[in-house]
Length: 407
Image (cartoon, rainbow, N blue to C red; front, side):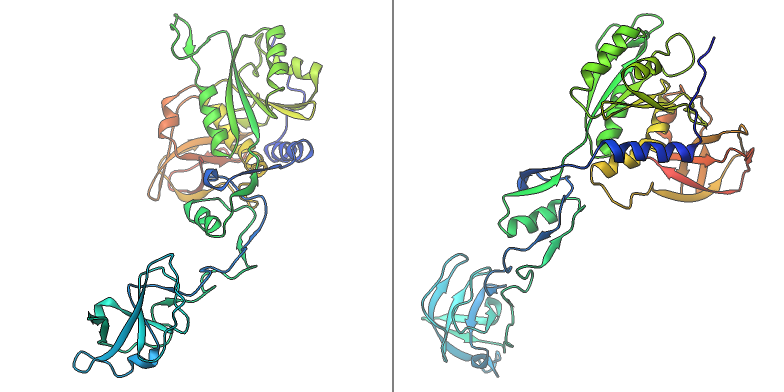
């Protein structure tokens, strides 16, 4: 006799319940890490500049630091001649001042000497015997980056929730930050279950299959900002499932158990959750993925995904990706990315529950993928899915639809 789904929920209700369980049991946390190791992390708080940048007036070109008035009227036909009194490389300084009739040769990035107003590029100058002929006029501040022209001290430079890419890391480094506070990655574990499951590298006996969901759900969790790890395979045995879940929850805050959720003798996860914690969802009115279980044990969330890979991936993306991403600090205004297109074939749907239909997108065309939920290859060709409401029996060819994209 099959399992009775006592807590089956409509899709919208299930989404709200899962989000609330995340909000009630798992609070965003932060950690301080080295800035040079911060690529891909999410800022936990606003960041303000510590100093002006550049911290001094600096030359933008190789040339000669001059009083702009000493260059007025200069041309190739009638150059202005100045005395060169020093040379400045980037990082060096001088106690000499630029005065009327005198200049200092300067390299790109070097601090402008006292009183200098502009830089005449080396291409517009002829140096000879300690002097230089200026061949063009330089306006005040020409080829000079003024102190604080890029960043002023005390300004907001990065916002909470920013994804730290190389450019943003560069800004932090320019301000002298050694460490930065980022969202701590939620810890996620994945267990696969089923007597038929074999791990890659092991001999595949007749009647067995290689595990797909462990690595697949791990990858999806990582894409949501989690620190995810595969914790192994458990058999359809009550004692083993209970022991594996108990041990796994010592390491992670969120645990995904793939398989063992549908009606049948292998359905032990619900009973383990009933004993160790509380079941909040036992079945969702959706196809595929109805036999999804969600529970809480000691303020840690346990989610039982269907064993079929297509169903597991669909449920993860439709119900878990958003709250998990928010917990990781990714986009407070999280929305699944969507595109619109035209159906190229008719889809019949079972009235009474929401259907998620895998599709492939080519330009403006949306091609449905008609495979069962155990078909693996369809996952490699699918770009996302369309939602067919529970009271809709048919999506017709030529109809415009919204596609929810994976990742």
